[in-house]
Amino acid sequence: MINKRRLVRTFKKLVKIDSPSLHEKKVVAYLRKELKSLGINSHEVGRVRGGEVGSLVAFMPGNGMRKPLLMLNAHMDTVTPGKNIKPIEKRGYIHSDGSTILGADNKAGIAAILEMIRVLKEQEIAHPPLRVVFTAAEEIGLMGAKVLPENIMNADCGLTLDGGDIDKVIYKAPSQYSLAATITGRAAHAGIHPEEGINAIKVASVAIARMKLGRIDRETTANIGMIHGGRATNIIPDKVELKGEARSHDLKKLDRQVEQMERALLKACEKYRARLNLKVERVYKAFEIDKGSKLLSSVLAGMKSSGIKPRVERTGGGSDANIFNEWGIPTLILGVGADRVHTTREQICVDDLIRGTEMVLNVIRGIADWKNLKKKK
Image 1 (cartoon, one colour):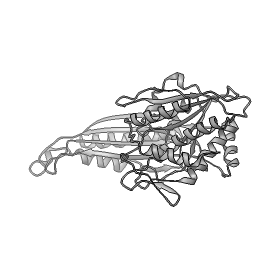
Image 2 (image 1 turned 120 degrees about the vertical axis):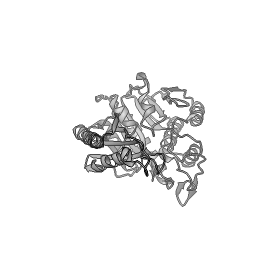
Image 3 (image 1 turned 180 degrees about the vertical axis):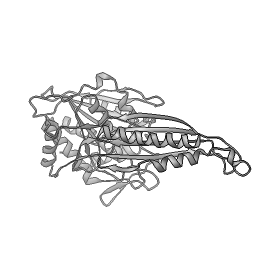
Image 4 (image 1 turned 90 degrees about the vertical axis):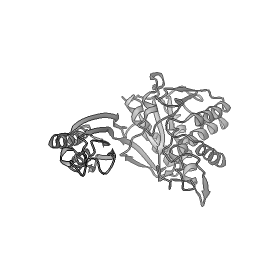
């Protein structure tokens, strides 16, 4: 059913197109051209501040049915280092030359969607109407999905092809808060008048040492991932900036964790008479799909018909699916084979890419058999 060579060829073309976050212009041009060749018009929507382009949205009418409207989603941007990617196929795997990521996150999802559209058209397979959403700036806080216009967010259900293992269905994901703090102390000469200074790095280190970080419990994690400050070894540093996050499937636990991190910063600053500027923002909201839903049942049936034994699991990460679920579009996360993502060891098993694409196509065919859909809020 799937044209295997075409799918792999499309994937390789996509990863060769540079598309770091906020710089997706070239991949948008490629996708618009490909969709147009298939008789599908597309348009850009919701440009993120500082971005070259917005997200790309297209609509494909159903074949023999008008409901439910199914959204297919993948993101166009990649993490760094992601320029001049050279895909190498060897022993059943595709990887980079080791100097960059591969970009299977999330070019594998895009390639799968393009191939499915081609197959649906070529073989005139019955399918529901499809809204294709290729988002920009996903890797920097789901920014592209967050600024999508309301008229785009009216699908009945969705599939985000941004997972890894093809046998895994992600039905539940956490909320995340970001934390950015600036600690201001007092500069002084480190060798002549150190007692006159307030060492902002020391204050930050005391605060971080008091924080609960890492795996807090089964549902909650926290991290301080960036710290920057100081000008020279002979100057007491007067300013430090640090950034961190906290995630949890339980909102009460998340609130407690963020409060604990805030208290650690406040107490350390009070003790050493430093000033604190703290900003905490919600990045995305948790979601959980009902295990008895038609959407999940269709996904499980599609996997089994593809010879895949499914695993229904939660994740500790966030994706565009968090935003779509918040809008009231029940959306599951599926994988098409990306492995070791966000590293220069990233790879994809060719067989997983093919089987994952076939599996999602079987899911779409199964959804075509729905009679009614109750939209979950």
